[in-house]
Image 1 (cartoon, rainbow, N blue to C red):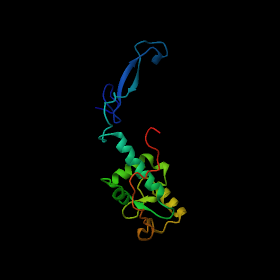
Image 2: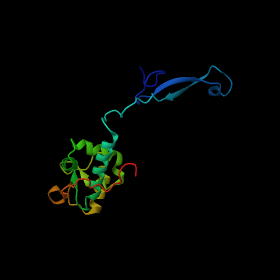
Image 3: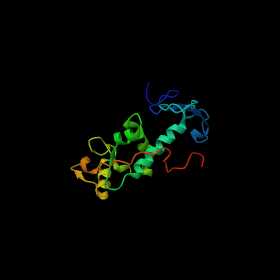
Image 4: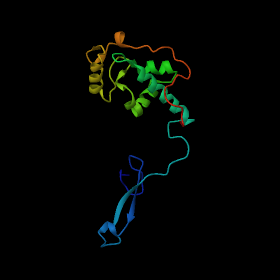
Length: 165
């Protein structure tokens, strides 16, 4: 099966179907066709890879964003630090949230466990860390001097508005 074989899903899970129109041939031949991408129907329930209530996922996202927003300039936390502080199961959850919503906060202040920048934008992250005055050793953050320990988390301490407000 090739990627764009009519009637079959391609690499992006979009079905390519022929559409018969006179317009496809400039109004000349009604048997001419064009290929049109048709998205598969949305399945009911949560998106793949997410279980349970979307509200819980949103609250986790807000907690991560609030914590990252609180990291002072010149200081950093690792993905694992954030996951442990918030009681999340994995540093990867923090990474996923920042990948989708990190533009809202100083995402560059979150680094890998060894102090290296995230692999997606290492040069930009290092430039922003330098601008913040974060201590570096080569292309890594000097975690012994730059790691930030947030104050003890208080229940209900989110600065974000409750859902529906």
